[in-house]
Amino acid sequence: MKVVLYFQPPTKHSDSLKLQGAKRIAQKLAWQIQAVESLPSARGIKDMVAFWNPVGAIVECDGWPTELDPSVFTCIPTVFLDPPKEIEEQCVFSVSHDSSATGREAARHLLQLGRRNFAYIPFRRDTPWSRDREEAFVKALSLNGFGCSVMDPAQPKEDATKLRRRRREFLTSLPLPCSLFAANDETADDILTLAAHEGLDVPEDLAVLGVDNYEPICENTTPSLSSVEPDFLRCGELAALLLAAYMRDGKHFRGSRRRTFGPARTVVRASTRTTAAGTDRTVAKALETIRRKACNGMRVEDVLKLFPCSAPVAYARFKKIAGHTILEEIHAVQLERVKELLSDPSMQLKSISDFCGFTNPNSLRKFFLRETGMTMSQWREENLRTSVESERL
Image 1 (cartoon, helix red, strand yellow):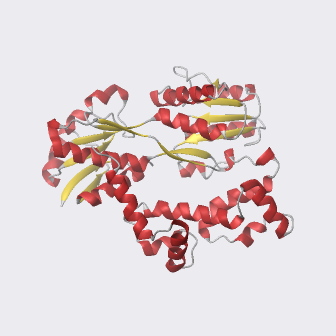
Image 2: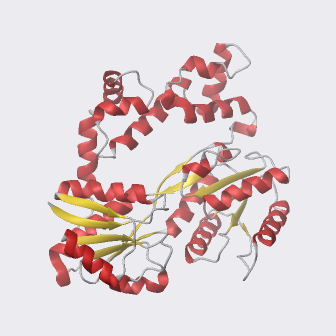
Image 3: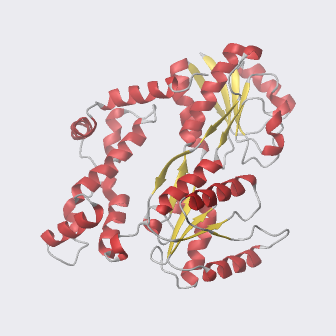
């Protein structure tokens, strides 16, 4: 079996999905993906090539303790993921995150909240990706007839205390209610903390949206943080497909050598989950509880306990706000989770029910067939086939 080296920083949370995407394509191409969590020198890569005899490599550029030197990988076909702009020209084949597409996705989500005031807070350092998100977000809002308050970028040698002071001043200057887009989840986490200090109610006064869907942050903020999730899985797929084309065609390759991936979805949590007319917080709490616990065996009866009223009234209140029943909401969350797990080819079908709130694999199989018209194995095979065929490199 052909070996492909995959260099991944040990601290990058997105790498697991990128690696998973590469493995999905590798399975079709009969490759073995060998993950490496150290960044080698020129001599090191030569020794590694001698040891593994790989046919190619995929290299994550961001997150290493030292700056990446693309020239050390000239001895094998290599695709680089998210190379910095200053070295992008050295990375002949690359896949990069389209931060402008992420900014547009953020605008779409926040515009749907029906508010007229918007704001953007950049990353703590002045970076190209933060500026790209800002520019696309502001432009999308302008296209729809809205302005946007933008906080000034980080100042040279600005310490954390001064930055937080400026952020607090910016928050208190905003007209309310306001929908705010933060450059990433780390930035949004700080904004939620500052909003609480300033007595701002989230999401009624300030709806907050981040980027990356980094669950250790998003699931542990108060309230939980909505976030645009980049399609890291697709990034890994594109890298493997591009590498396959590079290995096939070599110097005669005529396709685009630089590919991009955009957002996969916006994961809606409490920080942007505004209810109709902002009046029914109990329904908002029920929706958030279902999102968190539907895959832990939550039943309709458990949700009804959140309502200080009779079951018929609770059913009516929920459907009026959500547009569907409590059971349909539980099933929607479960189905999304099943599909996520099916996207991982290493996950055994018989094990998936344990992570989705079903009592046994047979119950899950019947549910999935009823909801999608396909068996789980058919859906997995179709999903993998579509990923391979959607890019003609």
